[in-house]
View (tube, rainbow, N blue to C red):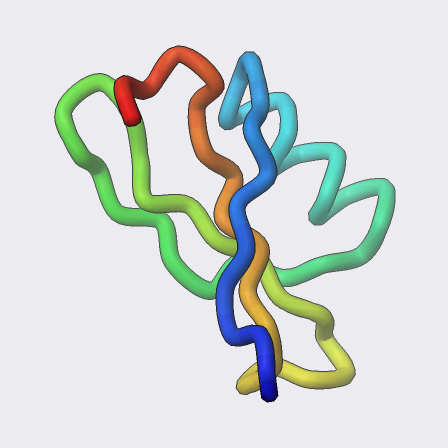
Length: 62
């Protein structure tokens, strides 16, 4: 089994993106506007085709 995508619920997508990219060193894979939110994923620079972390807004209706 391989995990390709997992969600991390965040209060502020842009702040979370800054943390994951600037502090932890991840790179942006997708940044697609979806209304008021984004389909925003990051990946490890060592495995750009590896698992993606979806920075999902915590207020998004599931």
